[in-house]
Length: 466
Image (cartoon, rainbow, N blue to C red; front, side, top):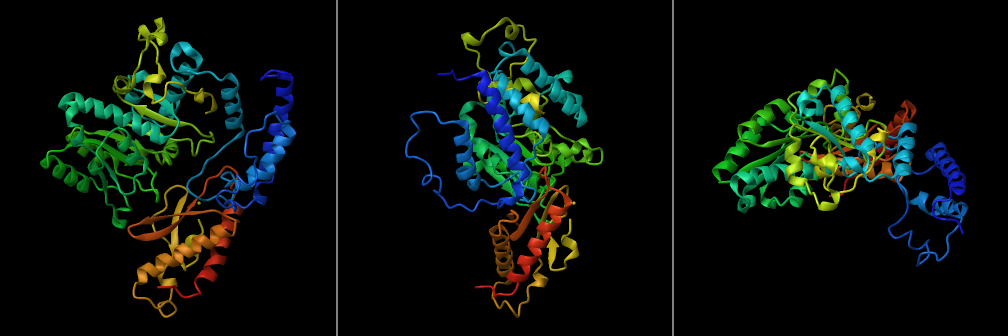
């Protein structure tokens, strides 16, 4: 019997796996974008217990094709316009193979010097491409780290902010700490607040309006902060967003940072969706005034997981997250001349991540773009003017408009030809078309719009049910 890593079999099976994946991509448009299975489908297809003996790779791949692929929502389909892009590339695949092949556990420098040093170099490269202030780079006493997700990044930075503040006001006052964001800020902010011990009543999701394109108003933030201070609370953490909400809202960083500085708050800029676009000079002004910055892999053709976080004060992270048991001690760490990334993240172990580093709506007058488009996310709906009050008698017309758009989205996704998602902003139900999957071409966008129009024709005719 061969061992767990038989190099002859590894070569043979590895070639088979690459062929399997390449064939999947070649035929990806034949699959319904949104999986059509029902909950619990897989339990009916697989054995009740794990196999006692191993099965050949040929059998396993056939099972994947027959049982797993039907249960996938195909994020890499060129007709996937839901949520956000999850781009991939040949370089991303091959980098992932190297990461898995080396399988290092780079928790500190000595565990794999190349893993740490490459990450510090790549993070400075990216920071320089974004024209971040030198204070964010290792060359300027700041630094960057690759986290698994934006949620992990926010948890780490909020924990650092918490500990820094409690060292000043006393740990018994944790119940006074307040976290701020907008009602369009990603839900990971609220999750992070819960994880680090912020009282739920001290989480502020400040209301935004269409008049400000759903961006957080500095004036409203200041008013909210001042009210909290008058109530004896302590402002701790502000999360501003750059295109990471349901409608790609862009918070005004400079004015928001001014409010935060005035009241001693830690500022975190979540640019997980559109941050990488700011490499382009024409989009760089979106991050003017940045205080702390995180963006993800969504546009960089690097597969999960690859979330970039830069901080001006790494010592605050290290102070909050560091552990140094005897078995991890070494001369390099004691010299203070190296980075130990275990102290920049939640987990001890970490992967060698660093190695893998447009629309038609306005032409159809039945539709309207609800929020001004920035980058490749379009938020649209069937316009109220296209829904005849005579055909849809109701006492709540706005509710009727939302129901029509909800039915339209259900019909679109039910077709299996494309997949989109929705958001509700200011009480308005909108359809989200997030363009940017690696394989998406202009023909796929055109086809998606035809699907929308076809189903709009059908949805606009039956009466709305009160």
